[in-house]
Length: 334
Ligand code: PMV
Image (cartoon, rainbow, N blue to C red; front, side, top):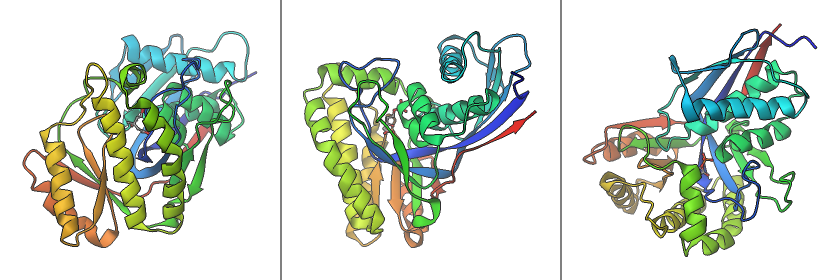
């Protein structure tokens, strides 16, 4: 079979409004099955663009113009192997993968979500897989849990499923990009990569945090409530769930041994400033991931005033404003 010479994919990053943290006990590490479902908003602007070329002699991975070796490259080639093996037998062709992240890498800003989604989609295009987004999302999940959600724009839900083979661990778009004109403020509180990767951090939490089981047991209700608030475009109800899910996840992280504290002092100061603004009628709701940055969901009319206010918190060096983003896509060249 003659493969296309190249495929270029673009996938946008996403931020979980209802969080995922932890793998399912007893599940295969390669399937990367989450212990809880999650619900996210795909982001405008923040994205990964990936070009994959097949007519080359060796595997290479270039990220932001620099060739990568070691574990980063190993994960990328393992993902190419998975995508290839899902349709073909025999040896995978050598590939050159060139990715550009239009967002900071490994800083709790979901670069692995857009990265693995774009990689999976580019590989699917180059290896002639049917562009069945559900199936591709399952493959993307094996690279990174949050990547399963970045195949779609708008608002996406990933259900944990029950089956050991992961076939019912499915992501789907709940609402398209235009469903609700909201803003997400990304309040940068640090520079540089996070110290503990989410994959190893969540495994430590599963093994040692006494809050892991309650975290898992209460997540499904948050998902359903968030979906219904999103459907009603009800910022107060959604925001209340967003903050609760975030603080439950961080409580579970902090009770891990040794403690997993992804926040810095500025993270907490931003939350306090956000709550003070809210008490005065300037309304936004915050969340944060496996990193110190705070993301704030608000309505368009509040975005400028909130950005200005949170931008003044000592230690904040940038506030970006994004909107719901588009679906991922791929172009294939013969
Ligand atoms: O799948 P990963 O390794 O990108 O982990 C994602 C974990 C969180 O960002 C903390 C939560 C989430 O659901 O995105």
